[in-house]
Length: 155
Length: 155
Image 1 (cartoon, each protein chain N blue to C red):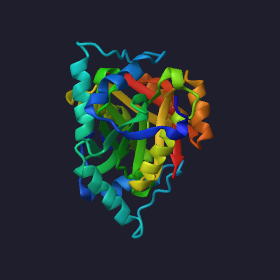
Image 2 (image 1 turned 45 degrees about the vertical axis):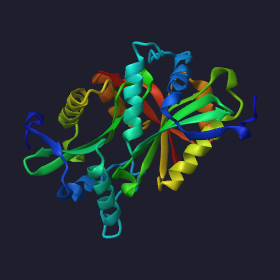
Image 3 (image 1 turned 30 degrees about the horizontal axis):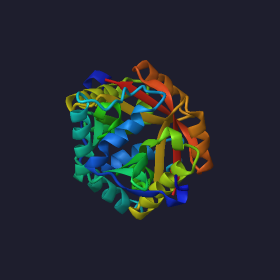
């Protein structure tokens, strides 16, 4: 197991897809019902391709050697408010359960921030389920203000 | 002044831009510093063009006759979680101050939901500043669950 400083981050490739979904599958909240099965695989592949096609979305993986130990997605959102400031939504942030609290999440968030600056964004935003209190402390330590309520409606 | 049922909703055009920014300008929270001036106009125009170019973003206006009385933006986000479910972020929702509590916001949110379904999305999401308590009750009445904390970081 390498220290967080040795973790590499790169854009996800199609061959990473099963490992990424497995990270979401082990999520204890599990409200999204994620599981990698022959039945669900086509939907994940279609979503991966939609992300890959979109110039405004990028999916990343964090690697310890060959092993995928984390993932996150960035969505760049052109927006009028804030005098036309480009925003970045950080989405689907996940670190392998066995590797949490080891600095991998902080590495991923630092990468997200660098990438946001590089592409000219002036605001990073994310939402986190109200039950994930450790995650909230983590984001606050990184300088995020818990200023908003996050609402969701399933269709 | 027409009843909310007579409000029309359509995609914004470049000629609507000043009226849209004026809606954000009258926002009492004002944390975004929005104002339509000769200095800020180029940035708004660039952001409008970026939204117009993006297949994943659509900006709308609500009209009472010729008058723009509301605005909102939809961002369609391809995503792996939820078995590859497409999400829609509802953003920059604003109703003209003099016309609030008249059903315009509900009309806009119903339009957003129809459009989300039409494009195959399975989740709507939005964030709202913690101080906007009336807005929170409004979203809860429309069936949104206040399940998440919303974090922001300015760069």
